[in-house]
Image (cartoon, rainbow, N blue to C red; front, side, top):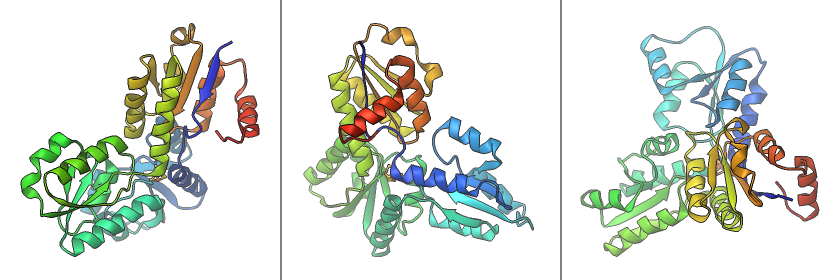
Length: 305
Ligand code: F3S
C-alpha cells in the first residue's frame, strides 16, 4: 500500500487565509469590490472571485484612473492583499475615493514600520528579497531613504559601494532562510556593522523546514502551488534538492499519475496560496484513504493538516 504524507504546514498561512476571507466577506455587498492585484497567487481562487464580481486592479489601472480623474459616484472598495502596498499607493486610492479594506499581513506591516523608522533616521536599509516582488515593492514604498535591494550574495557584492558603515537588514517574509543568513554573513565579513531584523515569517520557515524533512523521507514529492508563487517555487527548489522525483503542479490536472504509479512513499506540500480543496483533490487521487480519514487520523495523533 502506498503511503502518502501531507506536510502539516501545507497551504494557506494565517495572513493569506485572513486576506482571502476578507475578500469573500465583501462579496455581494452594494459597493463595487476590487482587489489591489490578485489577492493571492492562485488562478483558481482569483477566477472564482472574478465570477462573484470581484475585479482585480493593477497599479497601472489605478494610475490610468487617476489620469482620467477616476472619481466616480459609485461607491467602491478595494482590498489590499497580504503583501501590502507602499505609502503612495494608499494616497492614490484615497484620492480616487476608494474605501480601503486593509488585509496586509501584520508581519508585513511590521516590516513597513521598521523601514520607515530606520530610514526616517537616515539609516541605510537593505531589503533582502526579489526586487520585483509586490511585497518588496510595498516595503520599498515605506522607505524615506532609497533602500538597497539584493536577493543573492552576487548581487550584494555589486552594491557594496552604496552602503553606509551601519546597515539595517530586513527580509522579504517568504525569503529562503539559508540564503538570507549567507547574505547577512557576507556583509558582516566585509566589515559592515549589521543590524539584522530577521523578518522571515515563521510560517515560511516552518513550511520550508517541514518540506525539506518530508522530501528527504519519501521517494516522490509533490509540490502544489501557482506558477507565479515565489514561495512555492522556493519550496520546489528545496524539495528537489532532497528528492529527485519532485513534481511542481498547480492543480490535479497537471499531475501525471503514471509518475507516482511505482512510488511507495509520496509526500505532499503546498505553497502559502494553495487552497485546501486542491490539496485534498491531489491527495485523494493517489490514496485509498480519504482526505477526511487522514485528517481524523492526523488529529488523533495531535497534528493538524
Ligand atoms: Fe503573513 Fe507569513 Fe503568510 S508574513 S502572509 S503569515 S507567509
